[in-house]
Structure formats: structure tokens, C-alpha cells
Image (cartoon, rainbow, N blue to C red; front, top):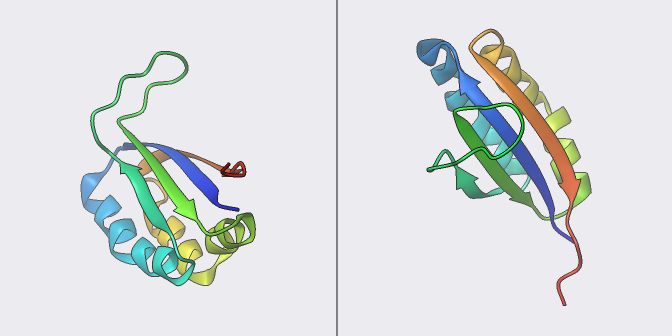
Length: 97
């Protein structure tokens, strides 16, 4: 069953954030990630306002967790430190009828 990363991001240092953007795709590719939404037009109805919203589908919950904990994504997160305000949630999907 699929699982999803839901991320809310406000980039505070675009130049430094480019380092994250250069490193993160390797982790996503390794764990079979598929972007469903990434930064398009959004309207916040409740909660904190962030500039970007991202939804990433993974084959399963184990893959989503492994991606976040991977060496590749740890390096990407380290490169992103101080360049963005980020909230990431990993959620298990529901069975498709």
C-alpha cells in the first residue's frame, strides 16, 4: 500500500536551497518516489502559511521511512539547514477499492 510524504516549505535562502535541490533527487529515485504535487498554486485555509507544498508518493511506508533516514537524504537535509523552514509528515495510504 502506498505511503506519502506531505511537506510544507518556505525557502528563506534560495541560493543555499539549491544545494538541497541538487542532492535530494538521488534519495527520491532510490526509494521509488513519485511527486504528486510540488509547489503549484495553493491556498491555505487553516494552519501556518508556507510558500510551497509537496506531496510525494512512495511504494509503501517502509520505503518512505527508509528514504527519510537514508544517507542521501541526510546529506540533502544538512545542505538545506538554515535555508528553509520545513515540516514533513509521512502518512500511510489507504487501500484502493
